[in-house]
Image (cartoon, one colour):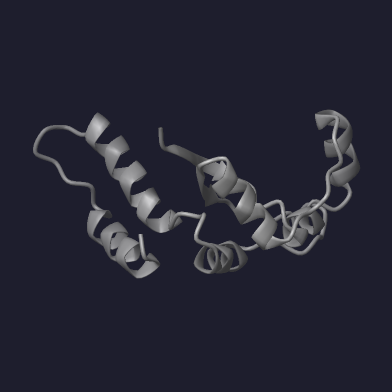
Length: 124
C-alpha cells in the first residue's frame, strides 16, 4: 500500500525554532520530547516506514516573532531528499480533484492554466 502524508511537518531545527515558546507546551501535550532531527534522519524515517511526505511550512513571525520555517526551506528540503514528494504537483491534483467533484458540467476553473504551469515549474 502507498502511504502519502499530505500535511507533514519537517521536524528539523528550523521547524522547532519556529515554534518558539510553544515547544514546551507541545512536548507536554504530546507526552514526548519536542526536539529536532537532521534532514537525513527525517528522510530515513519516512523511507523506513514507507511514507511519501508532502511537507508544510510554518510562519509564526507575526504572532510570536520567531523565524519562519519557510516555503523556500521546505522546497529545498524536498529537492535534497528522495523520500519527499513534490508538493506543487500534488497541489494541482488535489485542487483539480476538488474542482471536478463540485464543478457544473461544461465549466472550467479560471486558474487551471496558472496552476498547471506552476506544477510544471515545481517539478510535480
